[in-house]
Length: 343
Image (tube, rainbow, N blue to C red; front, side):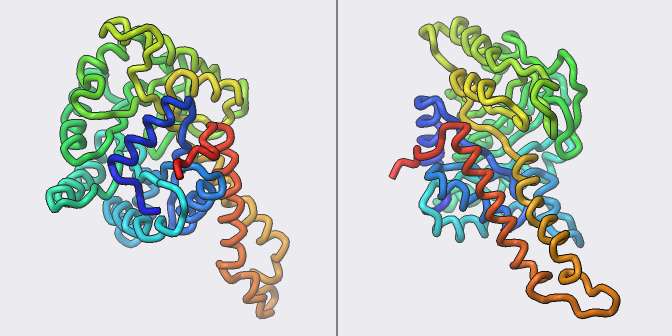
């Protein structure tokens, strides 16, 4: 199937919210990791989200120029072609973009999609993320308002991160402390500034103790039940029925989360969960295994010629793709999206 249209992407998110499941959002940095993500979604019979961070886009742009927009556009165009061979719907998303990179990443990509839509085409990406978590909430929301208006006009969904997520992601870092919990007041200010869908659809990355990167269960105190409090506070202010879930939440920093923490998040309105650290390891682990087991073949040791069959990138690349795809299938199972593709 082709990359999801704006209409299909909205339907995907609506279906996830109603069914209390979420889509894994898999970070990719190459055509091969893209195929691994697509393969995993197809094998799980799950629609999904593929995303490119600023660092990933810079890497994709090539180390000669390191141009983020070039890297993101090139992979997105590639994805539009190869995704047609996979029997699931895939949305393309750009991950974390802080203030100092907006003019070199999200704004140019928005402009590109604006031109496509003006020609009667679909946007290149289905959603973009604005990470204003390092700014004051007032400044964060002011920029979000500008971006949301442009995104809505280009048939794009905006993702916003209103409060800090701990750890480090592509140069944006926050300490692990009590500030990692979004308050009801934060949520109310967000609804006041961005509306509840009337000004354009957005995904909300709220903080409930999340931490980017690698950590073991128990090292961080996650409170996914906090998402229920945020929804209830906003629903009450806007006169919505009890049990309403005004926000479409995103779960950041999920590596190492327990199954129960994930399920609680799903029950409280999470429709997208970012997965990067675990899939990076899944991709690299079989490569390391291959190199250790075939040391004399991948290297021309002591003047020997090595073994072309072992140092051919296709040999270890296939194992890397299969391993990462397996981890994506696992993620679909954890998030309950497996088997939910609408055929």
